[in-house]
Amino acid sequence: MYCIGLISGTSVDGIDAALVEITGTGIELQVKLIAEETFPYPARLREQILAVCGGQSLSMAEFAELDDAIATQFALAAQKIQTSNPPAQLIGSHGQTVFHRPPFLEETENQSKIGYSLQLGRGEVIANLTGIPTVCNFRAADIAAGGQGAPMVSKVDACLLSHPTLYRCVQNIGGIGNVTYLPARQQNDWEESVCGWDTGPGNALLDLAVSKLTGGRQTFDKDGNWAAQGMPDRELVERWLAHDFFQQSPPKSTGRELFSQTYLDACWQEAQTHQLSEADWLATLTEFTVASIVHSYRTFLPRMPDEVLLCGGGSRNHYLKRRLEEKLAGEAKVLTTDEVGISANAKEAIAFAVLAYWRFCCSFPGNLVQVTGAKQSVLLGEIHLPVTT
Ligand SMILES: Nc1ncnc2c1ncn2[C@@H]1O[C@H](COP(=O)(O)OP(=O)(O)OP(=O)(O)O)[C@@H](O)[C@H]1O
Ligand SMILES: CC(=O)N[C@H]1[C@@H]2OC[C@@H](O2)[C@@H](O)[C@@H]1O[C@H](C)C(=O)O
Image 1: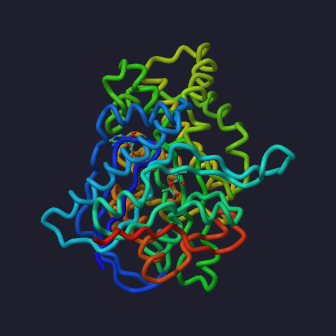
Image 2: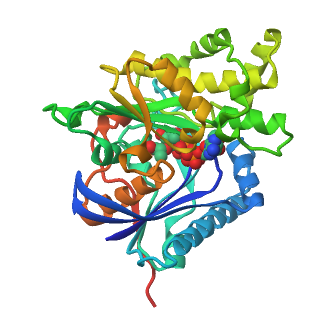
């Protein structure tokens, strides 16, 4: 079956689309990538989304308009990716996260323990604009079962990237970072031993810092070239790593609500006495991402992996990759998922095509309870069929 996966992540840089051909059932799937592309949001829409993610309030009418403006862009992306390619029979659309609140550890009188995660771009609009059945709202069922609702891609990672003899970590570095730990398949209990969590900031703080330093002319540190000219301040990084999030045991998830402009401003305040150049400041923020990843592996993994497979936009940051290699030297090899046959750019979009296929064609649960903390495995996503005339 030809399926499209669509996602716009926490970087809000645009819609990642993948058209794949999927055969098989359950965890035994074959997935062939036919096409992948990123469709940038119109600038004004991106600004609106970033403002809402940053806490700007909306009337219900404005909310509805934003929801459908996003759905329209997702539908356009689905239409464009099919140009000169076989038509798709199914869409899995993650949508655009605008708010994510993990479940509270303690329930109180005024706060329910259940998490909340909101993705805009409703599936019924996508289904009707494209004429293709669309699965969306993938996080809700896991959250209803008491889970974090993130990370959701771990089971797909296990399906596509586990190795017979090597222990691997799949490390996504988007706006936020997340890891899936994949024991070697030859282990009897390998599937139950898969684990994963959000590691903390990916590029989110770095992107905000670059925008500020360039007055908005640049939105990210291309290839890490700017940070590579500086020196990371290790003392600051150590201090920042003491934050609660990095000490908290999995299951855990996070978002731009925590790793926000306010968070960056607090880091900046602490850096004031350290006399950092602009390049040092960016090197220090890059090091924070690298250190948070390595710290979480050393603290929470049963053993260090043989290989770390990078994906997401941060995998193209050469300086970040080099620092990760240096920190893991002698322990783990650092590669990109491209090098083992899965597009590092499109991996998340591919994952939502697979999750939709599991939901629509196999009624196969997509969450891993040991990752999200849900009380049970559940079917992920709501199905919307196009209205036929
Ligand atoms: N050539 C590059 N050099 C350095 N960084 C890059 C490069 N290309 C992309 N990036 C970074 O990757 C980010 C986008 O990554 P990606 O699309 O994986 O994030 P996302 O999917 O929005 O986030 P998340 O996975 O948290 O949902 C950009 O904002 C930028 O910081
Ligand atoms: C709420 C939300 O959108 N979370 C994203 C975000 O981006 C990276 C990290 O935080 C991740 O765990 C999650 O997305 C991926 C696709 C996931 O759920 O697996």
